[in-house]
Image (cartoon, rainbow, N blue to C red; front, top):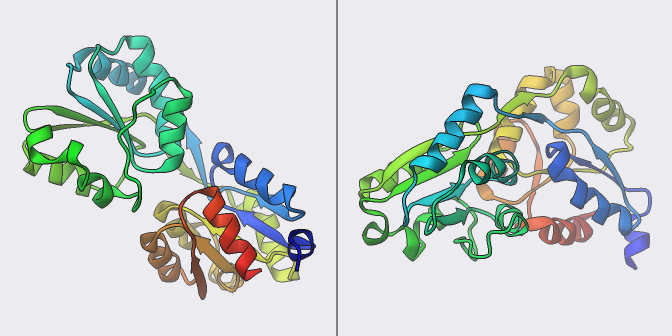
Length: 259
């Protein structure tokens, strides 16, 4: 079956925040598929006090310190504040996934420390740049939203690093009225798959839908890019979960193999 025939009539719910959904939606559309881009989480910028705190981190950094960005949203909201405050020469930049790495490179950071596989905190901690010898006595600024997994900061502190969290955006649950097209299409049988790429979004499934809506949505096949996200999706009532390789290309391949 050729690509166009495989995608014909198929609609994929892309649950990512709007900015991160665009490229994947374009890739699906280019193959003849349809998308329903309805985020489970909205991303909000920092307030004035938080923006000032981000800028202060830039001014307090020293050569050899590391700014670690947990997501493309962290780059989008955090990088301009750090850049405009004046980062000192010799600071290093790191990211957890390909999307964040590419976002930093697009912003002008030629050298970005990032794992080649794994794309989670554990993969980052396995990198030589984050071993005890490399980080002891250095400050690692973790640029993130208003919450996140604690493992990276905890282990880096154990290795002798000074860890500072740098919140630069907020997550807000989607409103019920914005999600009504998802429920309607799932019940009508005109929604054929869903893409889920964060544990926070997976947990949102139990918060934004009623029990009956959760059952309707949970009957869809979900495609996730990490085993931790898969487990969160199952805990949220999703019956069928497929693991895809990281990145949009991996999601496209997985969708094409199962649709």
